[in-house]
Length: 333
Image (cartoon, rainbow, N blue to C red; front, top):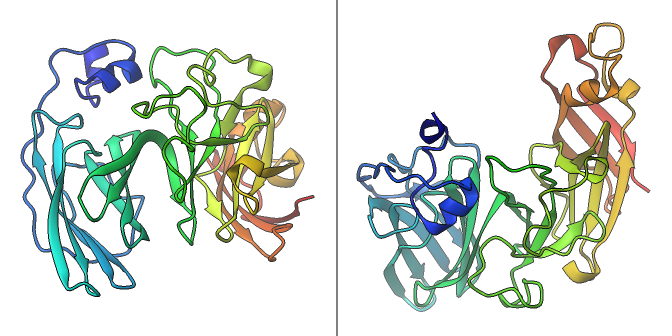
């Protein structure tokens, strides 16, 4: 039973850390056939199916990066070898690179500069991986595991949640991080964290006091345990990002301002009133504040002004009887 529950994880050192227990009979996926990629917008919600890759390409200025194919690879950490074509029209140059240490499925490509791109994908069905690729050599400049990565509109920052073991781990708490794409791998790690560390990567921006060192997001006391309550991160511009966070029975909308950089980020958290969101008349769970909070999630956050003080929050509801307003406009102080 345990092996079936965790069958999605590959037999690697990283997978063993994530699962806590080792699995000895991981299957090797069938080879995925490539085909000419089409110009396709970046997409995040596609199903996890690395055995049937969906080639696509993105363009920024004179640079084009195309995901061509994924092939079975017994020596690769994710069990897949990924092929990319990189073209630079200004230099009249086109090259093909193969990556053996990336995700098993490619979901997004973001060109950060003429010489670098961020490859976002799933390492496994519920765990994301970000890989920074050198477009001149095809080498890996940096990589890490995470949850819900989201690149800012100008590709200056990547926001995400810190990864944690999905099974047999107590007291998990969300730590919200930002990777500065213009900084070095060392600058995006806490002092003393090795460059080969792929779990403690990024600058912590919320909650206050986070350090992003090994083990800081597990065995956390319930009273101060954080949980993401939105479907990912929502960028207003290149330096402001919002998400919903839950501590106990309280949902809050959090806005992170990165105008002065990740190390000097400011966070503003605005609690949401349950009575403004959940239907007290129809929701059977309303009497239990904690359950009523969990009856909803934040589906989208839109910025209504340039100062990021007025937001429109869109809700989704897991219990029909608890259905409240579709949206709510709030002011963040």
